[in-house]
Amino acid sequence: MGTGVLSMPVYEMLPDADITCVDYSPDMMERARRQAEKRGLKNVNFQQGDVGKLPFPDESSDLVLSLNGFHAFPDKEAAYREVFRVLKLGGIFCGCFYVKGENKSTDWFVEKIYTPKGYFTPPYETAGSLEMRLKSMYRKAQVKTVEGMAAFRCRKGSSGGK
Image 1 (cartoon, rainbow, N blue to C red):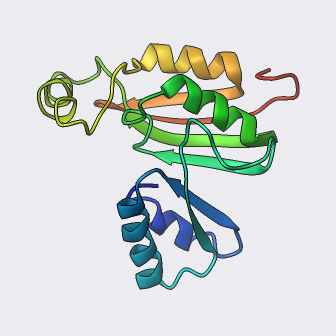
Image 2: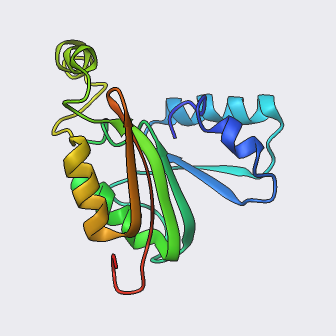
């Protein structure tokens, strides 16, 4: 969830959706709540939680959106498993995050500033490793990169990934 600065404009376009935002940090949740209030969003709920152990039943979500999250998660493997677990059959996982090796300047900032400060947490996906991972888990997985960011969209299939 983070502060909601990227996701709240998306939520404004989904007035009929039932949206639950999850973040580990109470401070981030409070900042996101203020964003939602400022925008008059009534369909957004907030729940503190860990993406590595999501507080939702199996196959309970139609969509999981992760904007700029995965590069910060300490246990990325658990996060991938949990997202897959909570998605309904036919559910969509989409979002974006930093991928290593696509932009030398971004890689430098991540290595020298963001990682030492704890904003980003290795290991980092490459565009190729992300595409392979998502295609092994989901059907219709699409990955596009712009500089050091990968944007993706995939759908959960009937027999696991395919």
